[in-house]
Image (cartoon, rainbow, N blue to C red; front, side, top):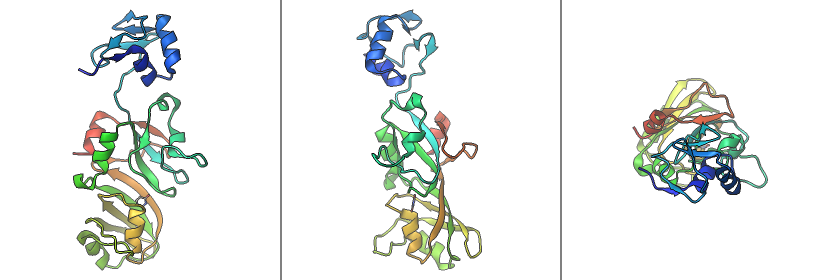
Length: 239
Ligand code: URA
């Protein structure tokens, strides 16, 4: 059972309506609770225990939203920025009223998996290095990888300024002058991957996050598109 909430607040929180539009819709009998119109905006209802509909359409109550976004390069990964486009510009209008934010940042030029949510506890659990949730990145580097580098990553390398890093992995997937590597880290310091590579004389030409814990980026999701995570996908992050 959830917490009983005012009907107008609930409707406004879940739909495209403002609070005052929700009040009007309720007074007009457009909102039903278990199939019966409820015209009192201040009626307390438990959203987990009743079926709520607006104009006959189930509002699909969700306490929190969890969206998978395939981030393109060129957008800031922040909740808002007055002067530059952000990943929030990619959120479809029906989810814009929620207080969504990116759970963990990618650089402007980094592509790939971002989770947008309004659940602060979840974001904290996912990002805390204590929980050792590994994030995998594919990276194209600007020089061959010396055989000593994977071992240095595994021991916990340091940035050039001496900042220590937790143990990580680097696996060469395609050798060559600009090798393709998989890098897994369980912390999210600013420019983490680029600075770890930089400490070994390696520049990062291209970077894409492809998984968080057991959750893989859905490669059928176009760059710039987002969709709801399934319950299974959500729990796979921590599994
Ligand atoms: N590490 C980086 O250097 N950049 C990112 O965007 C993510 C991890």
